Length: 209
Image 1: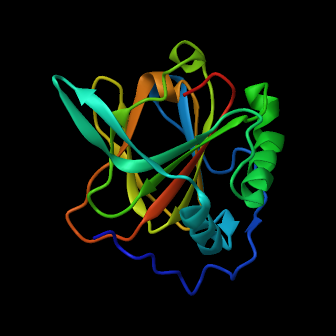
Image 2: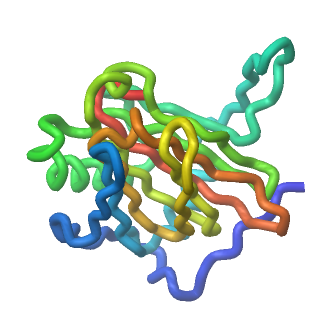
């Protein structure tokens, strides 16, 4: 049975607000031209946003072929293409703020939003990079807003190597930039212990999946 989300008493109430982003202050440079930024508690009122998205998004289950078998993808997903209305006004505000801050560096605004719902400890995403489209050959940015129960997010150099991890949840903003999608991989692993649900919202520029 999926775990029930437990709101935090420290989340800041029902009003969804975002904090200013300090340019470069929280940037960590990785190997091969990649970098990451982590902004803790960037969204206040994130529990309210989680509950809104959990209830209103038309979540769908996917199946994928793994070798000779069709298997269920261990999470629920939704995708909002360019010009498609987002499911909550707060996501418009968030996307506009991210575009205003990162567009001078990126050269374009964020256009799409992908959402994943990790229902419990069994849901996960395997090692991968967002290399569908222009990100296969070009530097880009992917900005992730994490809502709900914190989960481990891992990164490692593509092809193997020592990994690093960070706990993301409850309004954290995590940005991957430079060559990160081409030269590094990331994942959200399954857990051995019980875990409540988490929603990941990924903002990307046009032509990046």
